[in-house]
Image (cartoon, rainbow, N blue to C red; front, side):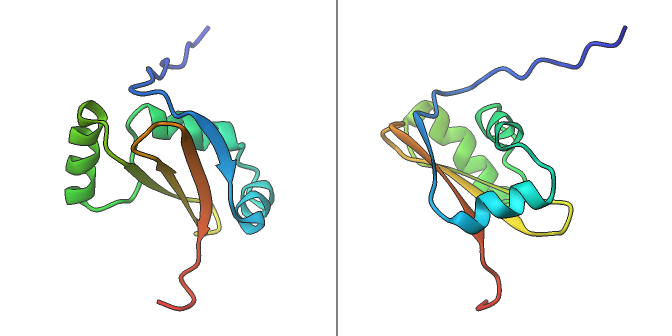
Amino acid sequence: MRHSPRLKPLFHPGRLLITTPSALAALRENGVPIISVMLRHIAGDWGTVSDDDKRQNDLSITAGLRLLSIHPLPDQTRIVVVTERSRVNTIVERLDTRNR
C-alpha cells in the first residue's frame, strides 16, 4: 500500500474566503477541490510565482507578512491565493489575464 507524503502546514491560514465566483467555478470545471489548492499553499508550495516572490514568501512565514501563491489549473486558468499579514483570512480568486 502506497502512502502519499503528508503536507506539513507552515502557518495558520485563518478563514478561507473565495472572493470571486469565477474562481470557484473554475475550480469546479477543472475538478480541482479547493482544499488541494489550500493544502499546497499552507505547505509552502507557491506554485508559479517568481523566484523573488518565492524567497519573499519563505521569509514572510516567520516575519508574519503577506503570503502569495499562484496555481494553474488544467485549463491554464490561474488561481491566486493570498494569506493576509494578520493570518486572519486567506483569499482565493481567479487571476484574470484578459486585460494584461
